[in-house]
Amino acid sequence: MALGEKQNQNLMHLIRRVHGLVEQPDIDRHRHSQDRIGAFLGTERGAEYIPVKVDDMECEWVHVQRAHMKKYVILYCHGGGYSTGSTVYARTLTTKLADSTSMDVFCFNYRLAPESPWPAALEDAVRAWDHLMHYGYGARDVIVAGDSAGGNLALTLVHYLKGQKRLLPRGLVLLSPWTDLTASGKSHQTRAHVDPVLNPEYLARMTENYAAGRDLTDPLISPLFGDFSGFPPVYIQVGDNEMLLSDATMLHKRLIKANVSVRIDVYKGMWHVFQMSPFKTAYEAMGKNAEFIYDICR
Image (cartoon, rainbow, N blue to C red; front, side, top):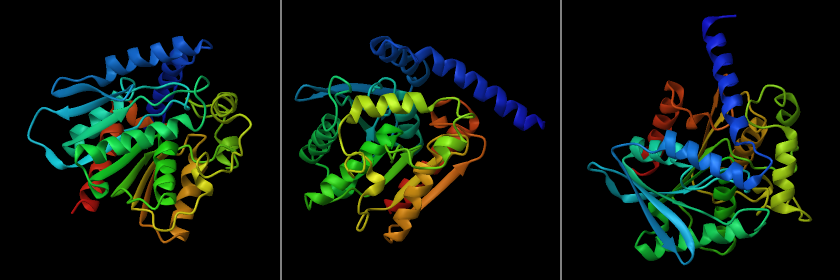
């Protein structure tokens, strides 16, 4: 085994162990563990975290404490299978995104399943979107981003806005997006044994929590099955060792078929939302996100 491969295997083993710390059967302990990891790994000097409320929904602005671009803003949808995650856990990503783009990032604590199943998270995403519109941003000033279930939420938000004949955001940035809750993609089987973060049982539990009794092919639940005509430009990042690889590649194909401007980068040896980790490839990937955002904001 080459040195690079061995290092990668060691990293995946570490990720599996860290993820195991937050995979608590007790969902409240799981959520608290994630927040501790986010506060420890995501909070950085040089960044400012400003809590705000939209009605009763807790949100957070992430600013870099230097001269930065004010015209555009990133609306960030956190991951966590719709059952866990928060603005604090998402700092492992929102801080890097604010730093790499020199833009403000707005993240929000949508209601979580199973206490608040679909469509609660989507309703809260619309509230966050409306808040930015009332705050003074135009739709074309907003880039919507998200990881995992947050990638799902970013896509369903745009499907919803399109269905309401509202103006759409300037672009979408999706990290390991969960696009198909029917789990029809081949990687749900072929990557199940190598993915250090996800497994079939976990995804089935998250699907049950969020959308029990619902039609999982509804585009506002599984955005892969929606009509993408007229969507803004999309950039997708995914690891080739993750179960959701097919969710990303099938989305890429459907966007191309709908004549949407789309790019995808499949990272060899990487796992689900590897951008959270504090290592070189994660920072390089965030640099690529910034390049895409700069391109569409010209």
